[in-house]
Amino acid sequence: MKGNEIRRKPVRKMWVDISVTVQRGMVHWPGDPAIGIKRVLDIDKGDDCNVSRLSIGSHTGTHMDAPLHFLRKGKGLDKMPIEATIGPARVIKINDRKSIKAIELKRHRIRKGDRILFKTSNSRYWKSSQFRKNFVYIAQDAAEYLADKKVRAVGIDYLSVGGFYHDGIETHQALLRAGIWVIEGLNLLKVSAGRYHLVCLPIKVLNSDGPRLEPCFIRNRGEIMQYKCSVCGEKIDGGLLVFIKHTETHIINHIKKDHPDWVEDNGVCPRCENFYRQQLKGEK
Image (cartoon, rainbow, N blue to C red; front, side, top):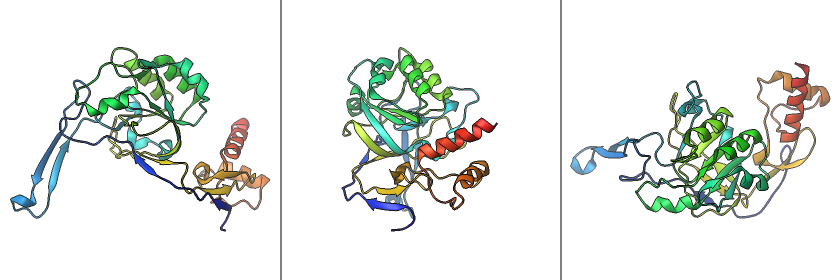
């Protein structure tokens, strides 16, 4: 074994693609540009290769909302920290066919830093190219609850976290002002409620309000490497390990003060990271 590696869990892993296929005639938000796909170079017409031109609104299909989408001086997607949408995630099934309410979320024990994806009856709408105005959305009080919990990312299985008739602007602003990264247009039809590992990769467009992405799941039944926290020795899954940046010298110095042999490239558990960050805040 190397470093602080402990063991592997010899269990099967399976990827599930939860993005929507881009195609002509696909559903889009009323007033947004319709999708266009045109072959501009064609081997069958004597060209050396095939090249297509894709025209699509930034909030069509599976995409993300940057703070810039609803906040005048908000960040673009190119400023998103990659760990916001890569790591452990939870799929929560919502049976309410109208909206996701705060009272429902309180029983799910949502925690700080969670990545939460909501599976609703919306996922069955992807079979139709007709826009559904009565889709299930996140109510304003639920958005404020998620903001108070300081989750990292929130996703939903239709084109907006906010409703068409209610809480469209309010829900977006509550989430985006809290620094929560929003994923929209997911297809969770084949995914059950539970814990997963999320990989969500937006196209890096400068100052973008909402580029397309290709998210996938890996179930936490996969072969997960376990490690010891290099500070306290707690055993945790590798996906939860935190690596302190080399530029964060104040935190590094604090850790080395307590653990002189500690090496910067070794990961620490979230609890130890939070302890030293809070200790640093207390000195300011």
